[in-house]
Figure 1: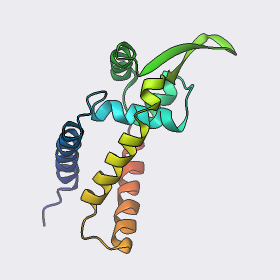
Figure 2 (figure 1 turned 60 degrees about the vertical axis):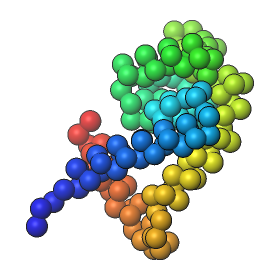
Figure 3 (figure 1 turned 135 degrees about the vertical axis):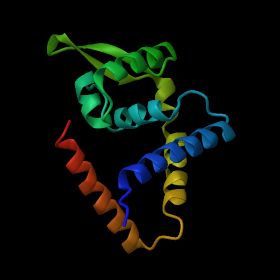
Figure 4 (figure 1 turned 90 degrees about the vertical axis):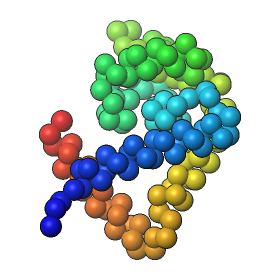
Length: 143
């Protein structure tokens, strides 16, 4: 038996990104891409967080995030604001434009979930999520 979990997960990510991009294009949404959507998703859950916190929540490296945030700021999706309690710190917040995109993102995310789990029973979905969560925890130990 050949174990190919890492390869399969990589292929799922690649195909999922392509499908997500196609759904964005089909809906004429060009305000953000898949990676930026992950950033927006975190900020829709909790605004006014540092780049480090965003890195922890998205799994993206701070160096990668810095250039992405620069582009998102130029596109009027996020703003950098000084932390009132620590002037050395900068926090990220959403613009009104980004707040207006949340519903579209949630609908696309729901569509993606339906695609991912087509034909699965609730029990299979729960089992899959549990196993993927365990793999994620294993990988985090090496970062």
